[in-house]
Image (cartoon, rainbow, N blue to C red; front, side, top):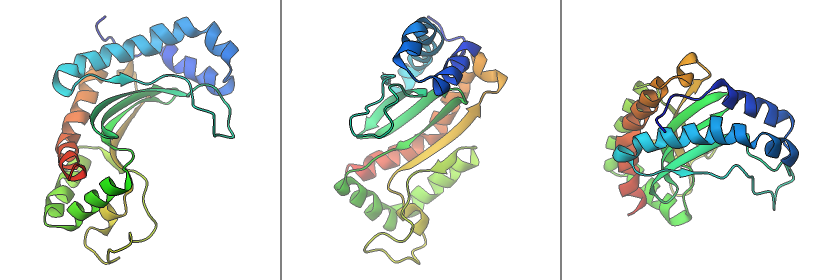
Length: 209
């Protein structure tokens, strides 16, 4: 199917799921999930695949084995195009609308060490500029950060804010503006991913070192 936007039913589905996160509700409304959430997301990522690669559509079920919250379903549906380990492009739909962006959401200790070494070194100047350019396009710099300087780095380092990151993403919240219900949101997501591409490519090289 061609991408036509996310219907209102997608947001309404998650509005209800947030209040009634049960297998009974999900099973009774699975056709809405399939047609209003999953199918449009597949169509959107398929339209982007030629440029960015094939996406993984995440399962709607939560892994509750080690969680106090035993709610069985996620209250959003995400898709991820992997570039490297835990690194790539992301888009999701939920009751809050559409969110898109890119970056790395996790790094094993050796990959995080490689990231910080690259940020602290001469290449870090380039990375900082790429991040600022992406922010200038309207993307928001996010991610898990240490409250202080990582071990081995001076708290007065000129790029200490970037060095504190344990994950780093550049995101844009499109919310539930009318555009998300139209084919035009595809172009918005494509623009976000393109704006983040230089950062993703830099991170791919740095995290692989």
